[in-house]
Image (cartoon, rainbow, N blue to C red):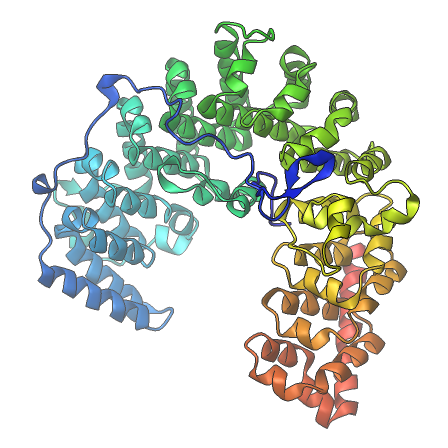
Length: 624
């Protein structure tokens, strides 16, 4: 579903329970960075090297590399010529690699060049950068060159042809200081250099990116959520934050030596656990380590989690009892605790809940920072026993949580009910009550517009009957509800929408995902799906000419029977010229084969019947 729970709502309209919700609501973001930042130890603060101390890149050299990169990008996609061109350019790079890496334009070009690099030239670039590792890693431009070089490993280590190449001349195999190290040796050497000055690199704004990338490369796990994080520790937008939590890591094969070095680095975290819990920049490195270790070395991940919780338990208790509650409300340590919650084993998670969370959920849900770790706790719940404990305590406060603008907590609770498969009817009833559409029962038919816009019944009825702005969290809420075992109430409300309202939902960036859920949820029968989608009749052209609506129409088309396809094509054919001129509509017209439909109907029907037959065969194979 590509959207996620950390959100902000703008103030202006009254939501459930009288709180301000809706189009103008500013939400429960974290306090501004720096308000409670703890200073790093003085010995760990290092300034970026002065520009005068770095080698200068002449305009002529910059122009040469710009032209060379342009020629390389225009060369044929594969083949020996392009490979040879990349080798020659990167051989020229080697002599000026530090100047290129620390120049803003040069750094950007070098990053692109490394994407074309064969194995040996990449080794030569890394070998040339390694003596200046501290300078490059802690430079605002150089750090991205190191990251790009390290991120080539999955491509090159997984390519036997590259690894076994032995047709290079003797000069290619020898570096300035003797035989060229292999890529594996170079990465292990870089990791050893970082390990020897671990606190420095982890605590540096730029250097921490190298550590985080190195951890992922050593573990053979590239985390998309880490790429989604803005540089410098700044805040994520709603959609970025959502994507960050839901993206799945990509795994690659790695040598056993990489995992051994990953273990070495995990011990470095244990030695200075207090710094990694309290320092904002260093904490990001520990968060990445937990994600990588959880996938590749779970025993070491568990050990780090125990160290974090053990350290926090030794701090002063809060007025409420558990010392952990203080850190759940802290901007830096709460983010680390979010990651700990996501990687804990189910038994450890239940124990942590009973020791620290139980009895505190209402206050955590109301807190502007602590509500986020609570969302991660809900994301991590996998057992009916733990969900029952959480639901029993949190459900009475559901309307109050919505009124405070912490809708992400409610969405996480609904998602947990969907995932675990319990308390679904109860949470739906609580939502209807919170949005003031439970009684009389005739109000329930309005639940979709209310949930989508996060507005209470009285507010929605007081404005125009057109669908309001669909929020990211409102869309997520509806998507989860459509995957409940019995989504009947939501489907009845969707069927009651007018054509323009359903069109507005399908054209909305967030709302279009609700249509995706209708089409893909196993809980929605073919009959129910058809009843909802028939409202779009007469709206297909408008749908096709919309960025998000055209994607929805493509999804409807791919699952439609021949009769439904004829109806869609006939309606689109009436506005064929308009579709062809539209940037989105002409893609739909091509997908539907509209020209064939209008000029050679019989051939079109044969073509569509063949497509339907292939789809049925494929589905039967997948079901087997």
